[in-house]
Length: 212
Image 1 (cartoon, rainbow, N blue to C red):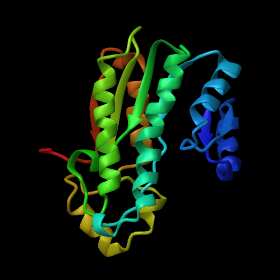
Image 2 (image 1 turned 90 degrees about the vertical axis):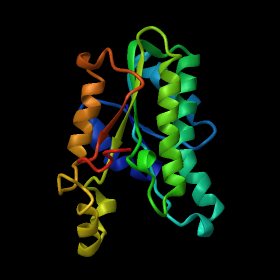
Image 3 (image 1 turned 120 degrees about the horizontal axis):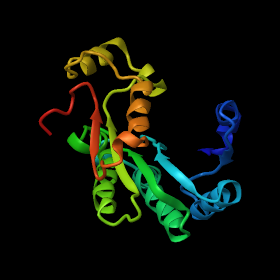
Image 4 (image 1 turned 180 degrees about the horizontal axis):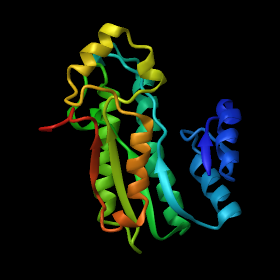
């Protein structure tokens, strides 16, 4: 099941259609979203083996200049929605035995980042959530987090050459990561080789967060 906001459905359906999947239009911050997702899972698959929490937004401002809705929206998308969705799936016993939950955190959740107090708080909260839930889950279900560093995406594509050079000066490997490298880490965590890994936070950051 692929999930995205209604305005992104054309792109989402192209992706899910290519792998014989299902597309679900949903705003995960909506109060009804957890039930909508759980109903969809139950109707089409009667349960779920893998859950990847990949939704994320940034609304950057220094804390003193940050509008209240920037804070609320960032926490809702990056943290609260994950907790509420998982809670609904667990309550309805839709998470199958030996299931896997993978949450996307960020190096900003480990080391912080100027102008991203809201984002860093949310992503740090993801790490705390993963570590807390790992002690509570039963039936072989694991939960882990991946913490990307600077990844080549549409968001980083708008940076100037000077900004990119400043970023790369901080990364020991001297390059951006790729979305494929994040996906490969998630793939490992959802595979049989990671069956004894839970409550872990795996940085995929080119060495940026060393020492934190």
